[in-house]
Length: 339
Image 1 (cartoon, one colour):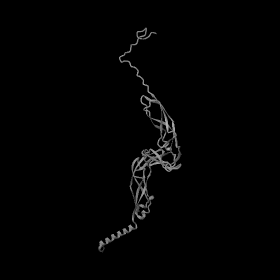
Image 2: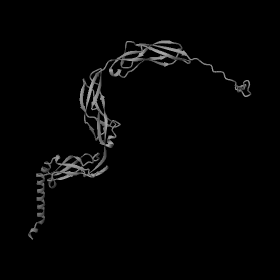
Image 3: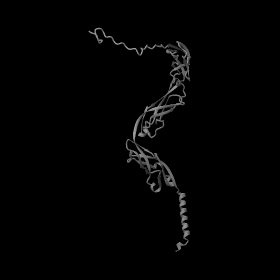
Image 4: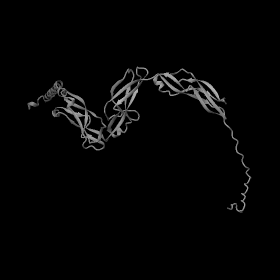
């Protein structure tokens, strides 16, 4: 038959035509892919329970097809969700369902990163914590004390029981560096665990607190008592029975922060090792680092010393001495009296 003539050439020509057609189509209508990252929604969660996705709250979805069709797609046309109506307390393996426009089904290929998710369902716990303020840095103003008051002073933390039980404090931090006056600022409180690490996946109500910062002028002077430092005591049998110091208090000058750390000033060390009688000693005052003593630079310490009185031990009777027997009273033979 004539159609069999030059069959090999005909097959080659057909294959070449098909390849050329595919090539032209690939150039005019190329196949491309676009990857979207979509949040995974949790639907029908049981009341008083918190769900936690162990595989992450977002997933990648690949859309593949002809270039002009893929480029017409949008991320908001994709939806990924998990139905929790069948979930049990503890760990679950649940399918991830996808929703997208019906016209995509025949013209595009939609491939999710995963089709199942590992999910933990825990009882919900709610607790109230006071808000702690952590101030760092130093204001530009000298001689002031920074005070910070949060409003409200406490917040409510709600979340999975295992997360809420880890929380030890709720704190806000503020850096005072460069501050030149009072300030009010909105800030986000952070729940932290015992090591100070943030505890995530917990709801804080309210989500923000108002921090009122006040710079309070502080005095540069402070009056503190003087304390004698008696290092070496008198030799035995002498002892100190009374002492006094003059002046009893002095005034210090320094920065408010340093003065706040000092509650007493000591004298230089006093040795009574060779003192056996009442004495009066002038001794310098030992100013703490970072402050100065106003006025008096030394103190007078008066010490009263007494010798311990040695008492002689009571005489003891010889071991072989016996007690004399009791003598009977007159008129009796057995020691009883006649009335």
